[in-house]
Length: 236
Ligand code: RET
Image (cartoon, rainbow, N blue to C red; front, side, top):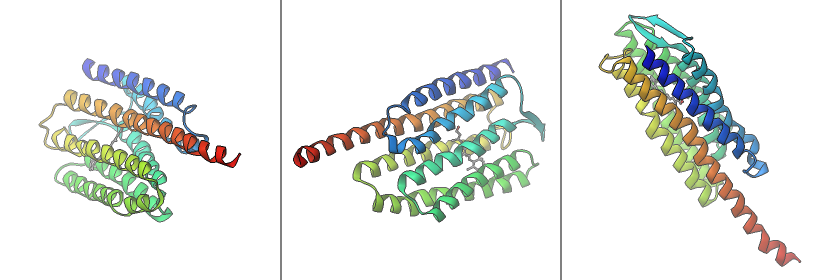
């Protein structure tokens, strides 16, 4: 139990540091992108609250003979839709695709949680529904939303969209694996190890996503500035 608290505390520190860096980044991104940028601060910001509560020992329940960290699912339910929403905004996706994407991602988490508190074999059926819904998220990000990105964005912005999307999908695919191997599934991974892996991934996915976007948005801002200068000179 002491080690789990340690992992949660480290997670808290990682999210605190990440949020501080990203909050500072707000001043560095172009003004017209700042509203959207707030999502990137909110993502680790929400996790600060979640990790503080978990480090203090709140939010876990016993279900089906194992511990379920309810607050972890609450965090994911709030933050993963924000992540995919950011991608949809970046791509200039249609309203319909954006809503589909956000709802599918939220439902993925709901079904994963339902599976974690339900006896097997129903738990696996619920997991499978969650995985199928997540398949829908992947589909949208690689098809409809990628097409939208291609038609609305510059080459540099398209490459940012692709980088962030691939970053998200590759790292996020580890979560269902941990679910399956951990106590909610086959029980092959003990709860300390599963916690360590999840805490590490949570910090990397949340802060990493924000930092990649921040650096690219700063670059795009300065590309915009240098691109404008010759025009104004020519106009003089
Ligand atoms: C579950 C089980 C059901 C099937 C799938 C899952 C996926 C979870 C994901 C979680 C991502 C969390 C992140 C947290 C960041 O802090 C719910 C485990 C597919 C993708 C990115």
